[in-house]
Image (cartoon, rainbow, N blue to C red; front, side):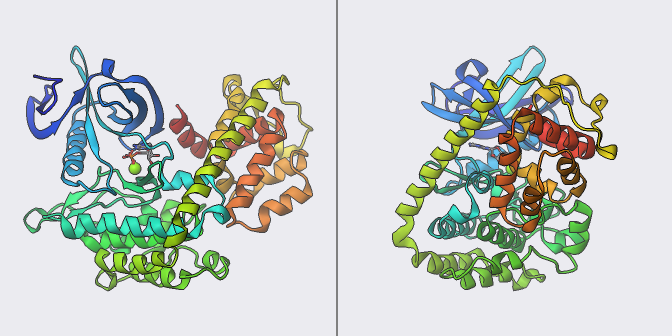
Amino acid sequence: MEGKVQQAVRLEKESQGLVQEQQLQFPILEPDELQDLTKIQSGGFGDIYRGWSPRLGKDVAVKIIRGAGEFSKQLMREARMMQRAQHPYILQLLGLYKKVEGEYKQFGLIVEYMAIGSLYSLFQKVTPKSLPWPLRFQILNQVAIGMRYLHHELQPPLLHLDLKPKNVLLNESLNIQLTDFGLSKIRDASSSSGTFTGGTLAYMPPEALKDIHNKPQEPFDVYSYGILIWSVLAAQEPYTGACAERIKILIPKGQRPDENVLDGLGDIKMLPEARSLMVACWSEVPSARPSFQVCVWKTREIFSVYKSDIDDAVRTVRDRLKNSSAEESKIKASFTTVQDEIEVSLPDSGSCKPKSEHMAPKDLKEGSTFLLKHRMAIVQRLMTIESILECLLQEGIINNGDHQFIISDANCAEKIRRTLDMILRKGKKSSTRLYQLLAEKEPLLVQSLQSQTD
Ligand SMILES: Nc1ncnc2c1ncn2[C@@H]1O[C@H](COP(=O)(O)OP(=O)(O)O)[C@@H](O)[C@H]1O
Ligand SMILES: [Mg+2]
């Protein structure tokens, strides 16, 4: 019976008259079995919610697809992939979500909620300098172990095809959980006809960018892992500020993430070894890339030098995360207590004159919350839009010293974060103005970030 543990899922596609039998053995939870569902992310083809499941006795994350049809097929594919991959470093599927309202049906995947979030969000929450090396190398080793399982231990192998920091979650102990099998493929000679259409540009190998007919193989994931190594060493995303078109053209021409950033890291034990693995993984020629078996050996050797310090490193990061969430609440609180009006009274500054007709008052009021939530992404983009900085400078929101500070090192995430925090602390008027300028000059950025907020 529907809704009982250990049942097969029947997905009815009434619109196309299709019926799909799914051989999935999972509990199916209905909306009344999930409490306090709150949206935490907007994803590619659905939204991620957090909630409490009394039946599973855990905080869960639910990936609910928008609409039905093709999307529910894709979701069930993802569920099947996750069901195949049972490993300590792979996020486990706990159940399925099903909501039926008359003709309307909605489906979702239920997994354990990871309070720390993804590796990507870790880069945003802690400064690069305070991300301890033992933890970085442990993460790289664990990702390689998880990927080795998919490529070399599962039969037939499973290609992830979307390996990147946003798809590496971290549990309470800061151990990794690979997730997002939405694009994964079973690497099976008899069914390898499909070409690859999705993925995240910065992590896609040159062969996939230059050949639309490219059939992904294991080296696809190894390339993504090479870029992920750079991200972990630099504690940031690659190519920030570069547009998609340039990435598509320049990666097949041999460009890779900026190694100068790594040159500035100083004398870190085993860094040269990690860099040489990174460079091998992102080789132009797929066959020149190492297997994940080799990646495990190399990262194990690198991590072994740091192993005795891992417990301290984990404790330090967990403490920092606690402090940074306290700091965030403090900034939030300062905005709810400030009574100054939203009205923006700014000096007449020629081309920088506020165009308030572009902004609804409601949007302006949400400015500080929006900036707070997306501060990292926004300030990274500010680096590429000098005109906004010029306006802020002319209007006295930032001074010459601040301006110099901002442009002095475009790759330093700590400076980036401090810059936006500085504007946030200056008060509501400054953040409102920054938000207004962003909405005028970077409407697409604001829209895309807003869609994550809504
Ligand atoms: N179990 C979870 N716990 C906490 N956050 C999660 C969880 N699953 C996903 N997320 C958040 O949602 C984002 C998108 O999830 P993902 O499964 O990658 O979906 P998509 O296919 O939309 O990329 C992740 O990058 C992460 O920030
Ligand atoms: Mg994802």
